[in-house]
Each structure stands twice: as C-alpha cells, then as structure tokens.
Image (tube, rainbow, N blue to C red):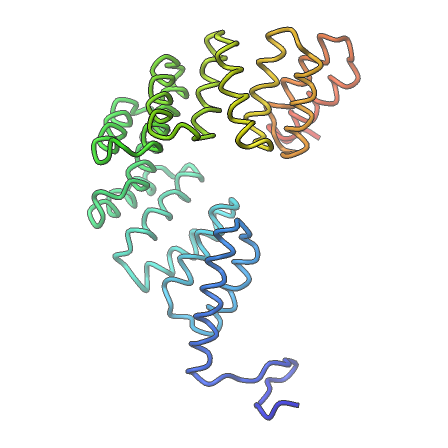
Length: 296
C-alpha cells in the first residue's frame, strides 16, 4: 500500500498543492486532445477532475464550457463560461464561446453583447466575426451579416473557409448563384475541400443542375466516403435523375451514419412513397416527425 494519506472512501492519496497543480495540468492537456478527437464526454470528465483539484484555473472552465457547448449542453456551458470570465474577465475566447451558447438558446441580445465585447479585445478574430454574422442573420439583419462576411474575407482573401462561410449564408438566403460563386472561389483555393464540394453540389441541386451537382458530390465522396451530408445530397440528386435504387443506397448509408438526420428520412420517405412502399415511407416520415417535432 502507498504511504500517502488517503481520503475516507477514496483510494487516491491526498495530493500536495504542487502535485495537485501538476495532475490538473496533465488532465487539462489530455482533455484538449480529447476535444481534438471530438471525445467531449471524456474531456469533460478530465476537466471536472482538473477543476476539483485547481478551481481557479480559467482555462479549465473555458475548455469544459466549450465541450458542453459543442454537445449542446448549453446551460452547463453558460455556467462554465461565467466562471471562466469571473476568473479572466477579458478573455475574448470565453466571451465569443459564451455568445455562441447564448445564440444557440435564442438569447440573441446577450449573444450580441458578448460578441461586441469580444471584438473590442480581438477585433480581427475570424471565428468571432463569423459568429456575430450568424447572429445578425438569425436576427434577419441580412445586410449587416453580409457586410460582416465581406469584412472577414477582406482580412484574408486566401482563406477558403471564409468564402465557404459566406456561401453558406447565401445558400440559407436561397441566393444559390451567389452561393455557388463563393463555393467555387473556396475550391479554387483548396480543390479538395470536401465541405465546399458538398455545399456546392447541394446548391447546384437546388437550381436543378443535377449533373453538375452529381459531379461535385461524387468527388466529395471519393475524398470522404462516409460524409453523411454528401451521401444524403447525392441520394436526392440520384432520385431526381431517376436512379431510385442508388438513391436509396446512399440514403440508407446516410441515416446509418447519423440516426438523427431528419432531412435524409424525409427524402427517403418520399422515394419509398413514389415506389409505393408505403409502410416503409410511413416509418421514415414518422421518424422525421419524432426527431424534428418530438412526436411520439
């Protein structure tokens, strides 16, 4: 048995302050790698222990808040960001992330206040500018949102993601030619950008340019065969081109990869309905209603 002093009902020895600081630091570092692997529950577990050991480390609270936010535990995220900001009031990262959590909860006034504060501290932070642009779009302040994206692009015109982000806003506004132009610019900068290929394919589908859409989606799936969104979009395109068998294969795989992919259930249900496979169609439409509206 170790000679350390043990807490009651706990097999771990009581750590000295130096040892607690050291263990907390390693836990934080491991948590960051878990976050990089999208293993957010594991990150939260490490950060929770790290916080118990060293409660006044703002980075631990911020990282745990970010993990909570990414897995849509927004109230827990807000609590963590509040504590991070109590310890480190001028953290642009914590402010920007808390703003994203507020926005996800529809608390737009608080979100905008956090984004504005964050941008006084880090005025050229691209992700915070984009988050504010998204919030402006949610508030139907479309001209301001587009102006924000123009500002982001002007900061670095060679960053493919910035063109994709504005393309996504154009697509949301159903301005498909403008979206396609931005996705094309992103692909000129990064020809193997899977997300841009998939999004351009979807925009092309929306204006009935099915063969071009299929070419983009095929290329995206050659690069990333298990991209559920590209599979769903290609399934819809293949159906429009009359190949329902191939379409169903893509949509089956899409919902296998993401069991909560509402749009894929809806599209697959429509194809099954067209094929007079009504029991299966009803099952897909029912699943879509459960996921989107909580029907039971």
